[in-house]
Image (cartoon, rainbow, N blue to C red):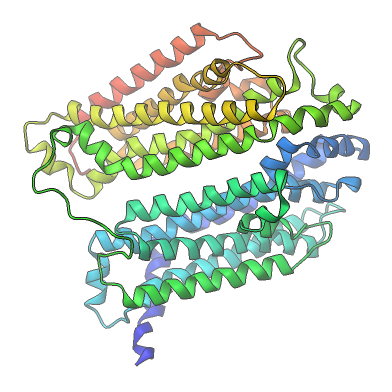
Length: 534
C-alpha cells in the first residue's frame, strides 16, 4: 500500500527538471562562479601574509562576528580560511533562499494554481509530488557541493586544497537541504503559497539573527541556528565533517516530517488555523490599496519583526565594538578614517546600508505582487469593475512605499534603541532615524525600476532582483574588494549620504526621487497600454 504513495515519482522528477531547466543551472553556476571569483579576488587583494593578518584583526571585532560568524584560523589567515570565514555564511543564506523559493513554487503555488489537483487525477502517488521536488533539490545541492568544491580546487591556490573545498561545498549543499526541509514543512502548515514563503523566510531570518546574537553574547544560543552548525565546519582550517552530518540529519528529519504531514493533510488546506472571512468586506478593503494591504499584511508584519530584530542584534554589539577597538592599536590605524567621529558612529552607515538593502526585499515583493496577481488571472476581475489601471497600480505602489518606510524605521529604531542601551556614549535616536530614512529615495528608485518592468517588460520583472543583488555586492563588499567608486554609483545606494559621518545631501536625494517618479510614470504608461495577462 505504501508503495502507491510514491508511484510516478520518477516521472514527476523529470517534470520538475523540465520546468527548471534554466533556473537550476543558473542558480548552481552562479554560486560556483561567485565562490571562484571571490577566492581569486582575495589572492589579488591580499598578496602577503602581513596584509592577510591585518584583515584577520578586523575580523576579531564583534560587529564582523555578528555579520559573518565567529573567526577561525585567524592566527594564520590564509586565502582559504579567509574565503570560507567571510563568504560561507552569506552564500549559505542565499542557497537557503534558493531552496525555499523552489519548494514553494512546486508545492503550494502549484496547489493554488490547480496543478496538483490535475496531477493527482493521474496514476501518481499521494506523496509523489512533494517527494519529487525534495529529491530534485537533494540532487541539486549535491551538484552544487561538488561543482563548488572542484571549481575552487582547480584554482590551484596553495591553501585551497581538495578536502577543504569538499567541506566548503558540502556546507553550502547542507544549508540548501535543511532550508528545503524547512520550506517543505512550512508548506504543510500554511494555508497558501504567500504564507509558506513568509513563514520560511522568517525562519531563515530568525536563524541568521539568533546566530548573530549568540556569536557575540552567548555561544550556547547560537546552537539553535542551523546556520551556526555549518560555520562550525571550519573549512580550510580544521575541516570538521560532523557539523555537516548534523545538518544533513536535521534536513532529512524535516523532510520526513513534511512527507508525513502531507500524507494526512487535505489538498488546499494547512495545519495552521485559518478563519473564514467576513460575509461583507469592510470599507477599508474596498480600494486597491486596502486589497493590497490585506493580501500582504502577514508578510509585512513578519518582515517588519525580522528587520527590527536584525537592527536590535546589530545594536547589541555596538558597546563591545568600541571597547574592542580601544584595545587594538592596529585596528584604530586601519579603521579610523573620518576624524571627529567615534568608531561606533563610523560603523552605523555600514550597518544601515546592509539593513536598507535587506529591507528592499519586502518592498519589491509588495510591488511585484501586482505581477503575481496578473499571472494568476485575478486582475481581470478587479478591472472589470469601476477601477482604473492607475488606481490599481497606485494601490500596490502605496503599499510598497509604506513597506519601505516601515522597514527603514524599524531597522533604525532597533539599532538605535538597543545600541544606546549597550553603549556609554548615548547617540541621538533622531540620528539613527535620519541615517535610516536617508535610504528611502534609493528604495523609491528600485520601486521605479520594478514598475518600469511591469509596464513594459512584464516577463523580465525578475531582473530587478539581479539589480538588487548587484547593489548588495557592490555596497557590502565594495570596501573589502576595493571596488572603484564609479561602481557604487551604478546603484542608487551609492548616492545615499552616510549619516552621521556625512551631512545629508538633499540634492542627491531629490534627484533619486525625481528619477523614481519618472521611471514610475513611464511604467504606469506602459501598464495602461499593454494587454493584461501578457
